[in-house]
Length: 311
Image (cartoon, rainbow, N blue to C red; front, side):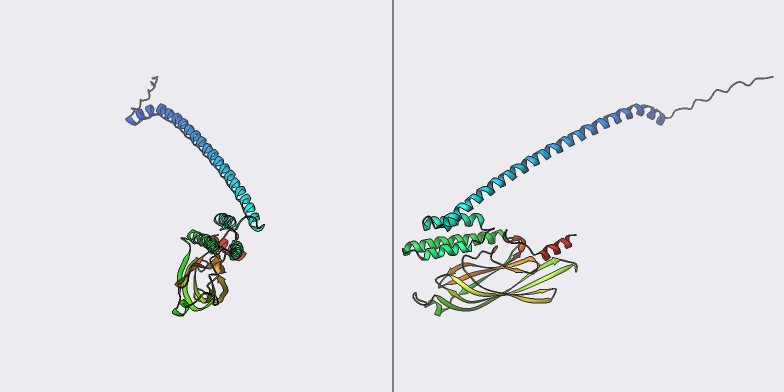
C-alpha cells in the first residue's frame, strides 16, 4: 500500500508592506516611548509653569491688598485729622482752605463736600480784610471748579451732555453794588437724551426730554435758581414728569448732586462759570448710576432687572 508523502506548506512571499510592518514594529515602540516621555515632560512643564503663575498672582494680590490697605489707612487718618481740625475751628483761614483742598482732591468721589465748602465760604465772608477775603474766595471757587471738572472728565465715554449759556441783557449790566444781589432771569433751555436698553422686548428705547428753566441768580453768592423738568418715554410710552427745583453754585458736584431717574440713570446740572456781567455757563449731564459717587446705591428693582437680563 502506497503511503502519502506529507505536503510541505508553501511559504508565502512577503510583499513590501509586510517588510515595512516588520521594520515599523520596533520603531513604533520607540515612538510610543518617546511620546509618553514627551507628554510627561510637557505636562510637568505646564504644571510647574501654572504653579509659578499662581504663586506670582497670589503674591501680586497680597501686595496689592497690602498696598490698598495701607493707602486706605493713610486716607482715613488724613481724613480724620483734617476734618477734626476744620470743625474745631483751629488754624487760620488759609490753613483751613488748604485742608479742604486736600479733602476735596482725595475724597470728592465718596463724600458730599458741599457743607464744608459752604462752611468755609461763610467764614470767608467774615474776613475783615477785603484783599484776603477776595483771595480766599478765589481759591475756594478754584478748588470747587477743579473738583467738578475732574468728575465730569471721569464720566467721559458714558456721559451725554449739553452746554447752555445765560447771556446778560443790557439792563442787567447796569447793576451796581449796593443794590439787591438778586437778579431776575427768565430763560428756558431744553435738550433730548436717548439711550437703548436690552430687555425682553428685546430693546427699550428711553427718551428723556429735559427742560431747564432759570428764574434768577444771586450776584454776590454766584448762585443760580432753576427748575429741572424731565419727561421720560419708553418705546413711545410716556411716564410722569420728574421735577426738581434747586439752587446751584460752584459747590454742587455731578457725581454727588444729581437727580435719580428710572433705569438707574442720573441727571445733573453743573455751573462751570459765573462771569457777571458777561455770561453764566451751565452744563447738563446724563449718565449711568453706576458711575455716580461711591456712596450711591442702586435701587433693588434696578439690580434685579439687570440680573434677569443677564441670565
